[in-house]
Image (cartoon, rainbow, N blue to C red; front, side, top):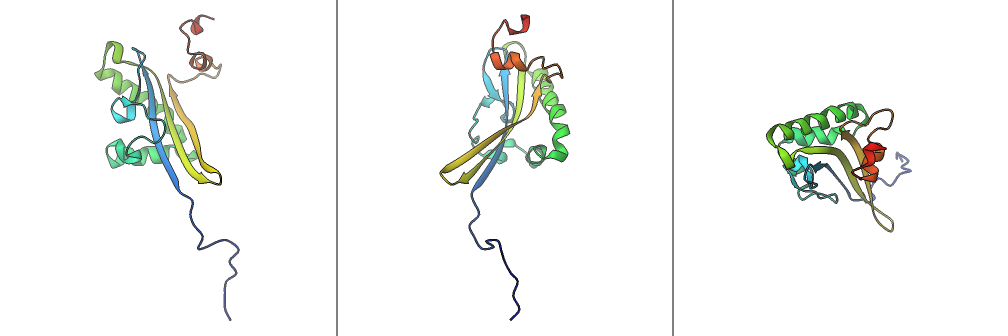
Length: 146
């Protein structure tokens, strides 16, 4: 009898997995919106439509691959370009003051779903000295004066 030894569950169930990306932007007036979805209110837990709500297939493909190691170097320039583009067509209280591009994934796991949320890039860019990191964490008006 000719047979291949299978030590992995070839015909087992595949756990459910969902992935999405969002651009959490803080505007000058304090509102937090999703820049990737034309300023809709932010939805951190799977935006309606997931990747398909990004508009064109090119946007879908860009952000699908941006989370990968080989494409991560394009995340910061992408965040800067998105903020610059938004600010070019919005003024005053609607200008972006900070942006975080985030990639999230939900997997079914024993005991319930597990969610992973990963920061791809921040704008303005965080410097090597850490300038801006603590300011974002503290979220206070006087944090930059310390």
